[in-house]
Image (cartoon, rainbow, N blue to C red; front, side, top):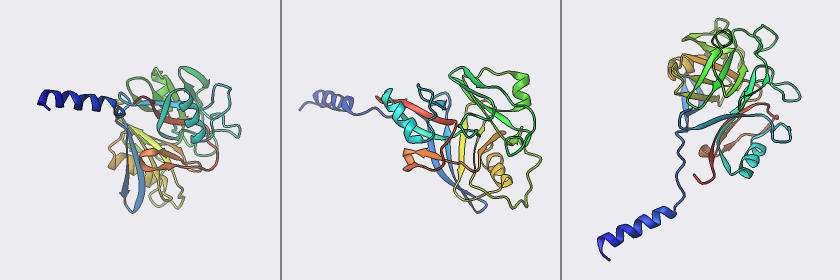
Length: 251
């Protein structure tokens, strides 16, 4: 077979193979100061990073399998997901929530009980070009354009400083998850601890290891990760808001 014909045959064979996902998503284990974490880095400009709460009938997804099935029926795949903020018993979000441009809950700027009300808290804002974590007061002042947004708390890192209430010698340890973003919004890093950690240790990871100036706590009682890359689809107590990366089935 001539070289030209061989190249043509190889090109035809390659064209029949499934296309690799265009996403820049990457999940990796990480250890720091004796603690174990899983870190998933997202490029908001390349990855389809979105928020999800309810299906078309208004029923909360509640778990990753329900969301995955819903996406598959619409010709999409779920590449990564994590619980994305605190919620009430009916799984409605406690704080500000926007999905695909539609606001479902207003911003809550006042202190209150529990971790959510441990001010300063913050908002994760997503749009087509970036992802930014804002401290809630800054969010209200700047009024950024968010296609999707979820409010949670407390903030872990605010402009490079740890939350003022975090104590190095704290004995409050839980499995925790959160998200940090770069100043330009070109990096969104989602982290779940694999062992119980303090707020102080968790915040230090975002600031000192991941180098992120803004980071937001998402939960400590309902921390879940979905990552086919790692063979994980955590189950347990039903969730409220979910943040995920999707891609068309054809990719």
